[in-house]
Image (cartoon, rainbow, N blue to C red):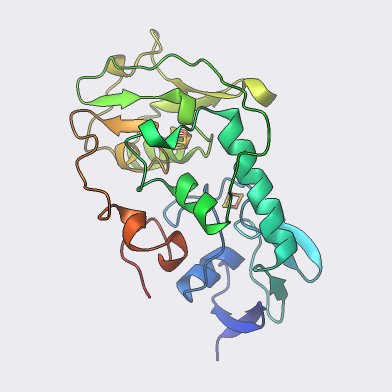
Length: 238
Ligand code: SF4
Ligand code: FES
């Protein structure tokens, strides 16, 4: 018999070595998250996956599942904290959804909808980060980066290229391109890279393909983010 823990009162089976979020998503129970991705090692930066495990708050993407653990996720308290974290992400960057081609396909936006985020609440920082349009096939809009490091992990661990990296500290942390010029065109990044298709928001964008999907048919028009089990949006399970 497999081991289980409970998530909001529901038994969740798990294998040794699985984290709480891995087991929960595999069982069709959504825990909000942005930097977790089933293909990559945990990063633990967004903190949206925070749950209360045996009474203590912790990130479920780095927490190994344990027999008999009592985990709470869908509580008013935790969702209010997740909403605040999401609002912080919105004001730290320039997330102006009405003019963003990722709208309807963006996991940050979909998570904000899931958490009933009705306003940004905090003052906008209005950063001014120049775009990188140097690559023939891809555009980078750094103003929307949530520093999830998925592109860093994909480029390093899957593509073997290390095109992307996070540099700086604190509020100055930012995404950089690993080329002397700092430009994407001066790397061996290509459209077939895993890193080209992993950004959950609107930073790494293919050129000449914006606004191609009609409103009503975009990923999250059809299903809310919580319907996508072990996520990254293969197919909704419900
Ligand atoms: S560019 Fe996208 S994938 Fe890379 S760190 Fe920023 S938000 Fe994450
Ligand atoms: S998904 Fe766990 S910290 Fe981001």
